[in-house]
Length: 166
Image (cartoon, rainbow, N blue to C red; front, side, top):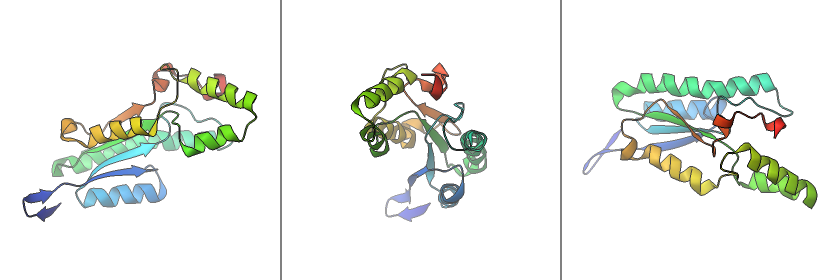
């Protein structure tokens, strides 16, 4: 932490892809500098990966987010630094809209229905909903929260359905 005119300056950081590579290095550096860090990953660590990427590698990386978050929380806790992660369900992002736009209208409607069926809330999330959850984790209201992976997924993790089964 650095000192400002009114005392210590608190820093909060959100890191995407914090389980590996550059994201992991950035999260570690921010922690060393005294920041509160929230690591974002695209799927809950309990949810197996599905698709053309290596299922084993991708699933292991997702599980690593939880382990890394807990380990960093233990290491950084004595310094008063909190570390949490957010595991996302499907979110209406540019990538999601590009996927739908690349399909014919009938297939896009089927994809939207399948995505909705994955989430007990019956829809994909919005970036604003993710931002609210992250803001909450970074706020003083969560001052005693550390080492958690918060599912912001419309209930997808508790449903446990494999994406290919919807």
